[in-house]
Length: 122
Image 1 (cartoon, rainbow, N blue to C red):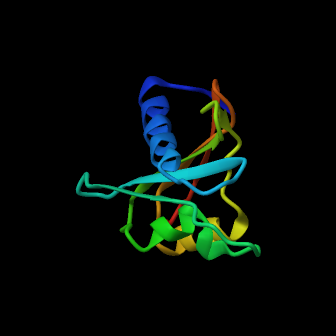
Image 2: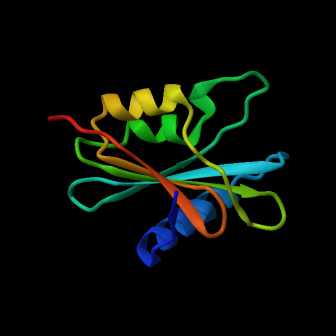
């Protein structure tokens, strides 16, 4: 766990804004922002599903838009108050992001901390 640095915090807030565009009725929303090697920003958010379905996860939906060396930011917000919550990607999402050769995944823990998952491909 690390204290939020300004750039990471800004990117997590951007992911939170993407999550907030979701309009269904849930207690939380997840948004993901990816930065591709060429600097292009791509985004996704969690879809709705009554059953546990990794295809509904923001990170999983984002993976197809990423390239080798991309960096991903994932934020979870609570409905109504926009406070950041724990957004660590599940193992299935980590696996698909790793298959896309993502370099790092930053995820929100709370308003003041974040976690990092780094992949080494050497």
